[in-house]
Amino acid sequence: MTERLTRKQRQEHTRHCLLEAAARVFARRGLVQASVDEVAADAGYTKGAVYANFGSKEELFLEMLDARFARRLADMDRALSTDEPPEAQARAAGRDFVDYLSGDPEWARLFFEAALYAAREEGFRTELQSRYAAMRSRMAAVLRARSEAGGFDPGLPFDQLAAMIFAMANGVAFERFVEPDAVPDDLFASMLELFTLGAASRQPRPS
Image (cartoon, rainbow, N blue to C red; front, side, top):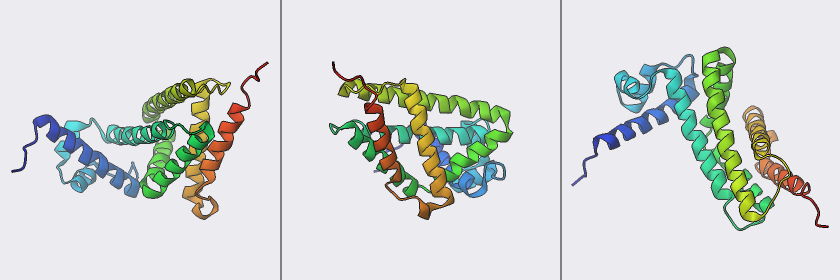
């Protein structure tokens, strides 16, 4: 006998389905042209279900990005939780990111769609900036925790390190999106390894 879901479980399931449908529809149609009706239909719900869970189409888009940001942070945290040297952890994190880009081609379209829309809509840009800043702060906290656990001092504020890693990741995602054949699969892994080794070289030498 199938176990009946609670009201909260049903709501969480509905939100999950709507967020997944939003990713598909927004990647295919773009944020401006996509409609709430299209997202609802793709998920198998009515438009009322969308507005019962999200205040607007823009809020739905932002929460969909939140979910994907959280997954990428969890991947990074796992890659940096091993007993391997920092540069090996960095390579693993780089490979994980590229594997994700390859396995979820919607991600690059959605990320760049958000940037384009934010360039034209100030209110959306403010919301995106807030979420992006929170993501960088969480990344900085992960880097700090791993540094303290491994006795590794990068010689730079962790928020700056997080911003650098984000900038590299975004650049690789853009290059792969525009000209995928020109970007080797191990490029980002090599970038992060060199970045980590460079940061390590900034540590004070023992006297």
